[in-house]
Length: 172
Image 1 (cartoon, rainbow, N blue to C red):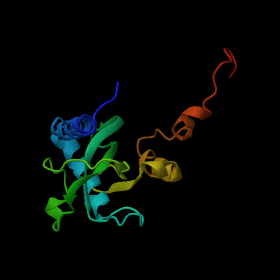
Image 2 (image 1 turned 45 degrees about the vertical axis):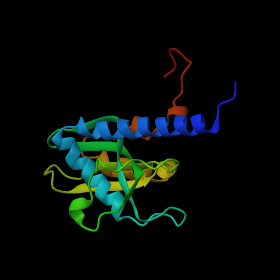
Image 3 (image 1 turned 180 degrees about the vertical axis):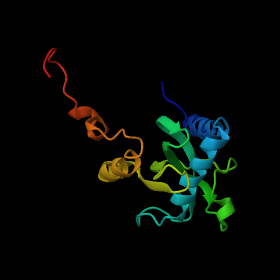
Image 4 (image 1 turned 60 degrees about the vertical axis):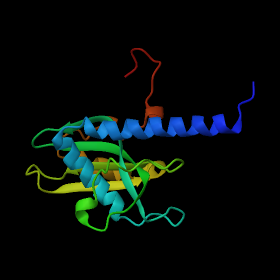
């Protein structure tokens, strides 16, 4: 069964709008505290000059939180994904936050961001945003900076999923 060109385009637009709406509604369900840290990440990503093959005038919006975030006093650790939108970057710093009116652009890489506090006063924050495909290159640095305050700095925080050994019951 062949699909007409019009139906193919309509299907692609519908799927794009579905994913766009999902990301926009996810932001609206976040707590005010979570939104504060997400907006820190958006500001960081929008202030960066990205690699030459990516346009530098695109506004990035929140897409989703990865894993479980920890937003308790005194500890803050959140990992999230951003994505480029059809909107241009805002000229003022007040516009460097999630903008619900901006739809996601298709075929743009995800931007992986980490926000964590570097001391127990909740005043010094480490914010780092990189392309999703570059996360492995910065992961050790992120773990070193973000996980030391919580005391979760262990072998498991360094292990990748494919490095974990299984299959030998009773082997330690």
